[in-house]
Image (tube, rainbow, N blue to C red; front, side, top):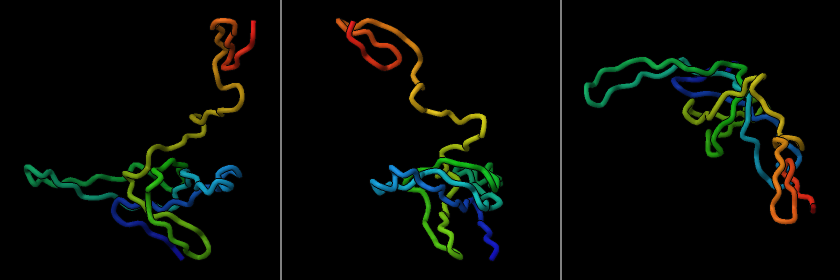
Length: 125
């Protein structure tokens, strides 16, 4: 079956949640765009002039979206979200991702009372 989005709608397949998210019952708010509509006509309320707003997303984009975004549908065994483009918060570019592992804090040292704080960890001086 071919899925075709209409107007300013985006069809997204949610990425698999991390183990911690599954344990606490949260859903991942990231996904991959499966299909996008062509865009939508907008009207200026004062003048009534209309113009066409094309979509900025494309199929294959990895995105972050609002936690209230979309309507979930199961189509041919795939759980898909249908949402407006306005519900998409940002596109995740491969070179723009940041690994927030253990060493994400800058190496800054300062002394606070009897403790020295270095890289987000406090040690007694």
